[in-house]
Image (cartoon, rainbow, N blue to C red):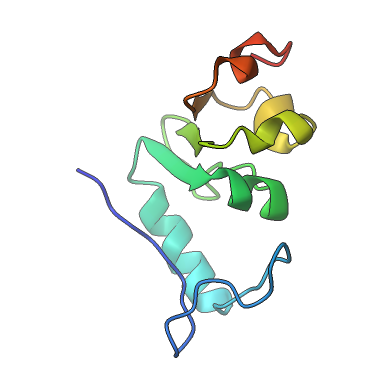
Length: 109
């Protein structure tokens, strides 16, 4: 099963400013989403979110397992951002889905 979690503004926009993190939810929503995420085995984001927000995608609620972190990087943007948390920490496996094999040859994988 796949669950999509997406924060949008009242006019259904996902991001208002290009290449800048825009918070759309309050602390109550943030806590609820983190409790829900603890029930899933993996968390997926796009490369744009990975490079702008630089999240670690770990659960803030205690679970018996660490989630697999998945980045969809169709355009290989991560090659210019090899210092993001998802690639440098060893908290949990990070899988990168891309069509380009250049990313597989980096020392971080």
